[in-house]
Amino acid sequence: MQDAQLVRDPDGPIDAATQERLQQLLGDETYVDVERGFSNPLALVIAVLIAIFTLVLLVVTLTATALSIAEQERDRATIAAVGGSRRTRRLMVASQTRLLATIGIVPGALVGSFPGITIARALTSEGWDPITGLQLDRDAIVDIPWLPLAIVPVAVPALAALLAGLGIRRTPDLTRRTE
Image (cartoon, rainbow, N blue to C red; front, side, top):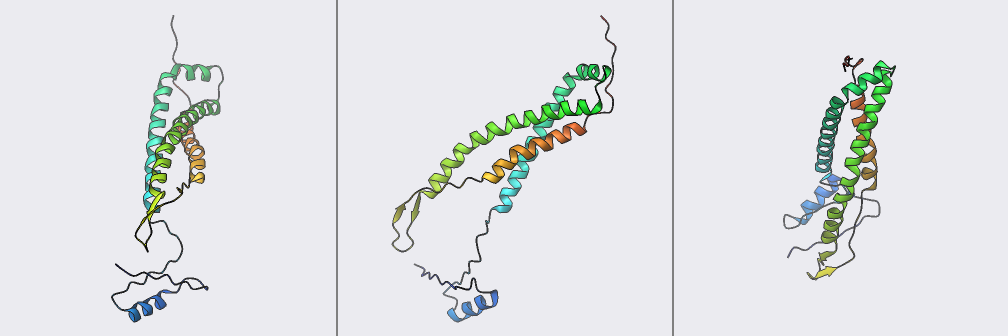
């Protein structure tokens, strides 16, 4: 069993040169690890996953909006014919896209929170005492990332709405209806 010692310096973490000297003094049988504050080793993975999910949500939302706009071509032409400005048509499409994205995100976040909380409880409620080697039962730690969960339902629908609004042409094709 490997022996571990925790050494604390009231002035903060030691520098790399001091760490190297300490490692040389203790020899190859001992490993010197200096904690310099928490850094999430999965931060890059999490950022990439969020980017992928955001891209998927944007593609799905914009595809659904494009299909809806194609079905509403006559209605948009009528709005343009009676004086509806380009800004009005953009706002209508942007509002529809924002609502569609929000409707997709909010239930998705609620449904995804249940397995997330369950897994966090399972992974943090049990552990091992490093000294005795016995299993510990402790209170679960569930830390919900409120900031990303608050930003995503606002930022992603806003971005989707902006992209959909910018995709509106200057003038729609006007067709003459014959009855």
